[in-house]
Amino acid sequence: MKGRTAVITGAGRGIGRAVACRFAQEGAAVVIAYSGSEEAAEETAKRCRKSGAAGTMVVRCDVTVPEECQTLADEAKKAFGTIDILVNNAGITRDNLLIVMKEEELTEVMETNLYGTYRMMKAVSRIMIRQRYGRIINLSSVSGLAGNAGQANYAASKAGIIGLTKSFAKEVAARGITVNAIAPGMIDTDMTKRMTDAFRSAAIRAVPAGRIGQSEDVANAAAFLAKEESSYITGHVLNVDGGMYM
Ligand code: NDP
Image 1 (cartoon, rainbow, N blue to C red):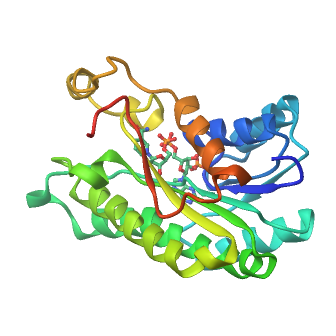
Image 2: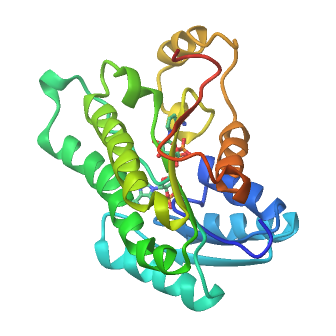
Image 3: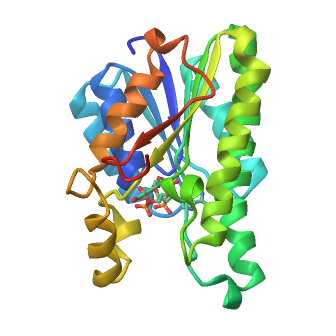
């Protein structure tokens, strides 16, 4: 990935941080976007520099705010001259059974997961189309493929991301841009630490590989899709789930 610039949303922690560090190891310049803690994002940048990043930049970007998405793309382009790789990683859960789910719990999840992905793809699209090169990787989920009780809002947003991914993949395939999704299963991050012990244990028992996944498992898949050599793979959903969904 030498000479490439990657923008990663939600890169202050969890899977986003692991992806940034993995890309840094491959020699990319990484733009670390965060919405909450600047300190956490700076820590990611420090780790990326240690791993060999060609450059790092930390930018605040709440993906629910359209202007901040555009500013992130503009600042990355200004600093590094290009954006070659975009990873739409920012995501939230607001779990509840549908019967008691509030409208706000649906809206909030859609705004971040689905609309955020749409906004960022749009913000980088002109740059990638003009340079006739791009790698876009969107974080979906096993929930988006299989559905999950208590996650109707989240599953709908992640299924929507697959629709966005495949449609945009078709729109830009002839321009040297690939658009793929990764569907992680159960990965050990803050998101899954919030689950009850009983739910977490049951979910891990449903993984044929017999273990919870690590952020690095997802980062390895992202690195594969982000490289030049994956140029003939587009509109694909890559499951990183230890066999949970098959
Ligand atoms: P975490 O909860 O650990 O981290 C979520 C990340 O999203 C944080 O970096 C957070 O940024 C960012 N984020 C949240 N809201 C916004 C927002 N409005 N604007 C910008 N960034 C935002 O989650 P994971 O690392 O586990 O998940 C990363 C992605 O992978 C998500 O899309 C998730 O849905 C998906 N995924 C995760 C699975 C898992 O088992 N962990 C399984 C399947 C999919 P900040 O800290 O700055 O607020």
